[in-house]
Image (tube, rainbow, N blue to C red; front, top):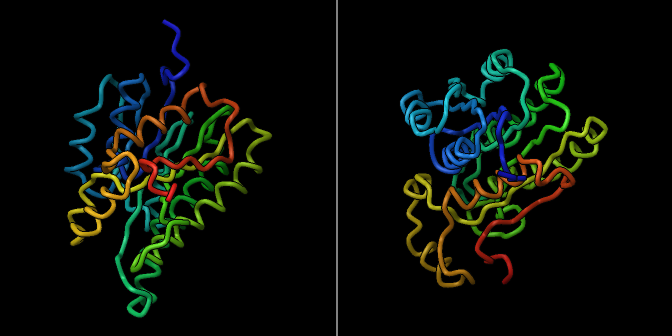
Length: 246
């Protein structure tokens, strides 16, 4: 049956796949026929994701992407890839007056340095196939400001700018580069913060009246990884229930 969104015979790397958006993307891509290579820091949670994938031939690789040696080891173990989803990320809800150099390093090492260095190494080692698709998971916070979110927001803004320049550089190889900007998604990371009032306010002001799910982001990812988006590059796609319309 004709399906331009099929991921059959595509090998895709998903970082930060042990939970949340990364896990959702990996699961949904496996349902579309992709062979997944998933990575994360927690072995037990990564194994849980692996057990939820449909089909055979999937692989998990433990890596702390804030560590350059782990990035090198990861890339060495990878086959040639049809797609990469740079999803791994961390946050630290700090007002600017409480920001420290350690907090800056923590956020930027994972949210910016890691995906940049992964892509650099993959390209240098010729592990991205022609017509490959590279995706960065950013955030609406890059241009939808909120208090105590300056570090996270700025790291995602940096990713947005990087992705556009990268798209120009790799276009001659027919490699595509795009960004997904999620709104607030129901993931375990929300449980780490006392955000009930903020979330209630978000839901009330959201035109579609609900938080998003990892699957909502995964479906956009499937489009960008598939041949259905073969003429789409350098785009930043917002998936947020309409909250940034206001």
